[in-house]
Image (tube, rainbow, N blue to C red; front, side):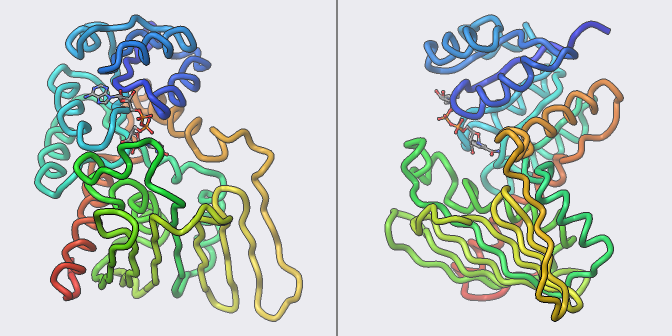
Length: 322
Ligand SMILES: NC(=O)c1ccc[n+]([C@@H]2O[C@H](COP(=O)([O-])OP(=O)(O)OC[C@H]3O[C@@H](n4cnc5c(N)ncnc54)[C@H](O)[C@@H]3O)[C@@H](O)[C@H]2O)c1
């Protein structure tokens, strides 16, 4: 088999991150780039190679696998196009906006022969791999989770709810997926939200209950600050607290022992520390080995379902049961 030909749709920030990573993988070649702003594709091509295409059709004709790296609201249409052309698809988060679209894309992805992987990079980040390893031997009882941002200004469209689908789709969805990865399926949630800085709900407090009996609180603000750690999971087990700090480190403290272990990941290069390198490698592995992707369309669908349930709980003032 020759090299897998990769096409990138949307060559902004994350398109270039993936482009640089795939450009270093001998099993693939970057063959095609498409962006509605032609100069962006031209710039990316200088850095990572690939034919600059003037349409999505031209891109499809020049690749085996498509990376969907354009803003949120475009994901469904681009991903469906790629599936219809028989391509493998790597779709950045959010999977889609809205439960109906999520169902449509999930069904299309599940009936396609190609690999379909969703860009929940954090699952591959060493800090969250370590947390999962520790939770294998320490049953978690409850947790407190936080995921904040300092602004919705960069890129500019992150403040436009018509493009993002809402702050929960843009940012918080990462840790909604992470909860499923670490703690299993959610059965019930209750949420409160308010609006302050932006023309949408921008501050959230949520309580989740899980199939296993596990439960947690979750805070997420889009207009707090980038104060470290903007992202943190504190898990409480039997006489044990395990706490993550962004992708940087994990503290593991046992009972009344005044010492605690720290696992630090700050020496990793950013693209590996955040799991991008590993998720891209896993995508190629799944294509070559014909194995299921590690983050599936069903995972994408479930993450959208959780976002929708939180918005619905806030609107109705009632808890949502799955
Ligand atoms: N997994 C992660 O950690 C992560 C990080 C950043 C962004 N993302 C996601 O990736 C996507 C892109 O984000 P970004 O930060 O790279 O944004 P960006 O604005 O830097 O880049 C998006 C690019 O897509 C282009 N574009 C817009 N509409 C298009 C279309 N219909 N067809 C082709 N190109 C189009 C834009 O011109 C731009 O160059 C978003 O959905 C975002 O949520 C994920």
